[in-house]
Image (cartoon, rainbow, N blue to C red; front, side):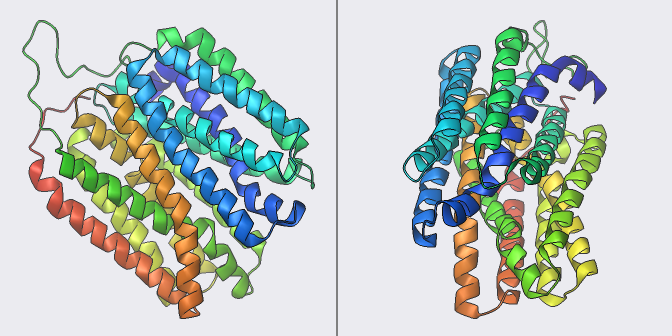
Length: 394
């Protein structure tokens, strides 16, 4: 892990800065639109849908642009746009300006996060370790960003946008200086083929298999998004208080970093299919537990299962696609981010509809458990048989 950090620290720090800005922005959106701008929940929902849609579009376009053009120029263009968007948001964040700023933020952030994962895919040469280490730094950004909200947000978004300006300005300077050096595979990771030898014959994912993996990603995030939205209401209905909900996410962030640090020592390409299935099983088990029991201890055990599943499954998907495809890293990583964003976008809405129609959360949690079980089975049946054993590139 330390060799990867030493070689890729500019990219890892870039991921931390961009995700810090992202994580300090999105949790405030509904609160600010509804409570501060006095927009109805319907109007707020439409704005959030537009934001999510442009975030998906940005994720895909970022990958395509990274494949076709110089990554340094693409990154500088995206970061420059984010700096400008944050400056505009600092001065103008009313009813008309804020939705426009938010939508542009979603588009450019989607593109930038895809560029980071695409560059990581290019440098990894099929290794899964790079994605595990990158995920650690992305989650550090999540912890820093969400922790900053309580300190900075007091009815005004100016401190929030100032933090965004600082993060994106630092990221721009970092990318401008070090993008050129991020063109070689990570030191300490063996190449899958040596120029003087015959290339290693590797299995490839077909279009249907890639599609199935991406759909599984959307469905997983659709269920996971319940923890980011409807579970907070569930906890308050149980009389446990919103502070417990906050403590659960702090626990999630710390546990993710610990588990991912361990994963960098054991992650292997041959183990990625099993890693994905185990991760889905753990996530499904967290919802199964929530559907059948209540209480503070249950919530922490369920969060533990969720976090373990997330730490194992989420970095495994881009690593699997990268290991079993050749070329077009930007395109494929763009699809990974786009399908993930799609699940995060529609998850809260669908969860709310299920709760409203069934008048209870147990049915929602049980459905989420079943969905994860089904996609785990689909991946096992539809993807694994097509993957032949390949030489370990690590």
